Every structure is written in structure tokens, then in C-alpha cells.
Image (cartoon, rainbow, N blue to C red; front, side, top):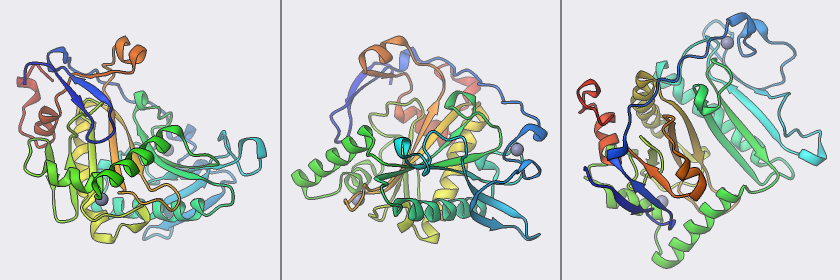
Length: 314
Ligand SMILES: [Zn+2]
Ligand SMILES: [Zn+2]
């Protein structure tokens, strides 16, 4: 695909310009260097942490742990900025990435997400719980010790509200779920990265992010708490594949788990937003996003069909 194309999102009415000729090789973002002795998430530096979830290893030490972020903007003690922020420390070992873990270990991280999601969404005064991960300096992670965050908020963030209302509008018009329909529409298309009986992984048609990826469970379910063991294993396999590639290329990323709002219907999924640092001013000024990486090309990269050294478009 050499010519640019204006593409519209599957159902949200947002436009993206896919402009492959503008592609640049992404910058390596460099590693965050931090000694273990200064890392707040290394076990030996724990001081009076409020632990809310713990999954032990064979030695009886914690391997995955959730702690309350004492320095967070939102706390349950503050009525003027009410909420709770928890950090899920995904391993006791410093300097690993999530793609370095076994499938079983990633499943256990998702068990931690589920536990904290269920607890926090039932707290009084909480309207929404966000689960996300930042990996690498450009994606906003300030600590090299791999972790995720779970934030319980007393209001519905505007982006979440828009997603929910676009979802409901589509259901009213079509009597089907847009994400179930996306799986049907995209099957056998060049944007498919990987699939098995539980999970559909694609580079979305109108991706606003270079190398953006969606992980859609094939079963229609509302939240991360509805995932069964086999579905978590499929997610783990897909995350190792996709995040392993981003790690290899030195691209920072965020991922978000998109869950149903309150009692609404929804199709839970995971969005991976790489941060290759190739944004131009136009996007920031107009809100019209230009993505220099065609989703079909990104899918090829993830499927391992392109040797990046041999291809100047990357
Ligand atoms: Zn550490
Ligand atoms: Zn669905």
C-alpha cells in the first residue's frame, strides 16, 4: 500500500489518515536505568506497603503483589479527590518485561487484575475502574520494574463514556455487538495477526496508532472478571507475541483493558497502543490522526513475515 487512505473507524465515526509514505524508522527509546537499591518495587525496598493482593512463589515469597499507591492523586482518605490507585508489581525480579514471563505467569497477572477490578468496582462512590500498563520511558513508565496500574475513579472519564455511547448506538441500530461484528468482518483479512478458538488479535482497520493492536475475546463478555483460564492463556500467548516484537524493536507501549461501564453491556477487550514517537504537530493541533504504518503492514511485522532490516518503510 503506497498511497494514503482516509479510513473511518468501524463504528465510532472517527477518521484516521493511513499514510505509509510518511513512515520513519521508530526511535529506540533507550532503557530506563535504575539500580535495584533505588527501586520502590524491589522486595528489599518495601517499607510499610499496604498489600491488597498477593500470589506467592514456591519459596513462599510474593511473586505478584498489588499495593496501594501512597503517592497517588486519588485516595480514599481525600473527599476532594476520592478514589484508589493500586500498583500491580508483576514480579519480584527487576528489569524483566511482561513478554519474558511464562504463559502461566501472565495468567496469574490477569488473576490479580480480576481480583482488584472486582474489589474496586464495588467500593462506594466508584464509577469506573481502569486497568492499564505503561512499558518504557515514552509510554509514561517511570520505573523499570514491570508493573500495571488499577485506578478506581469517582466519575466516568469522557472517552469511556463516548465509547459506551457509541457501542450502545451501534447495538440499537444493528441489534448486534460491534466487536462481535468486527471479528466476523476481519476474519481472513490481512489485518489478522493471530487467532485461536478463544481470541482474535488484529491490527484494526482505522488504527490511530502505528502498530496498534486489539485483542478481542471470541466469546462476548462484559469485563476482565468474566475471562476463564483458557481465555487468559490465549491472551498470554498473544501478549508474548506482540509485546515481544515491540520489546525487540525498542518501542514503548501502553495497554488498556476496556471493560463494561457499570451494569451496561459491552465486549471486553485489550487495546495495545505502541508509542514509537513519530507524531507530528498536525495530529495534536487538529485531532485528525495520521498513522504512517498501514495496519496490514503492522500485521505482517507481528506475524514475522517482514525482515525489518530489509524494509525501509519500517
Ligand atoms: Zn525493582
Ligand atoms: Zn460482542
